[in-house]
Image (tube, rainbow, N blue to C red; front, top):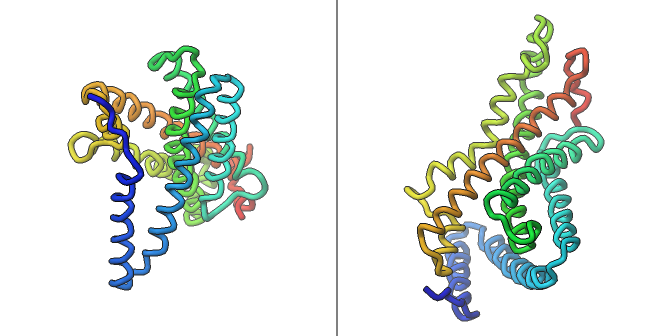
Amino acid sequence: MTPVALSPADLAVAAMLVVASAALSLVLSLGVHRPLLVSAGRLVIQLVLVGLVLRVIFASASMWVTFGVIAIMLAAASREMGARSPRRLKGLWHLGIGTLSILGATLPVALIVLLTALKPTPWYDARHAIPLVGIILGTVMNGGSLALNTILSSVARDRLAIEARLALGATRQEAFRPILRQAVRTGVTPTVNQMAAAGIITLPGIMTGQVLAGMDPLDAARYQILLLLVLSTAGFLGAVIASYAALHRLTDHRHRLRLDALV
């Protein structure tokens, strides 16, 4: 099957659907017409620019260009993860935990997949490495951010219960165990839901795109299975790293609660 090439006119049809939605919002006074149009405009501009940049990067086949792009992606994701939480740690700790989660969960998982499952030649091939790191980053950032936000909010809310456990002789891991469980569970829930619904309720976006591009449905399903399993692992690692790093920042070596570390 030959891949379907979309023309500007084809995209214009989809754009008209967004315009129609914005018009309906305006008629019903729902107030979401402006965000819809602005987001759609940003989507088009950003993705066209990304496509042009990736075309140049793929053509260069340079290891250093590939590593440079991935480094920029990692830095941006680390900053974004730290900026999402309404509660923050003082100083650079919030950014540091975000960076630790992003690096610790993304790079090992991406390397394992590149070296064992995808096996491109060379292994750092930009056409494989950059999209893979990009999709893993999104899951890690989301899972780590949710976990970090949960643990910081829970500590502020359940301070008395935590201090009571510590006063009764519990270690910081024991005192924080219910919060850690909830934080990690919250962080992995979106990925777990996505895996549970894949195939029965929804066709995942990547599989849909590959089928529309002409790939055999069974081959597309294999790629989607690989990616969802990889994303679940990376999201879990990101949530665990963020949660336990926050735990060690919010306590000291004498197992005392350090609420002064919170803004």
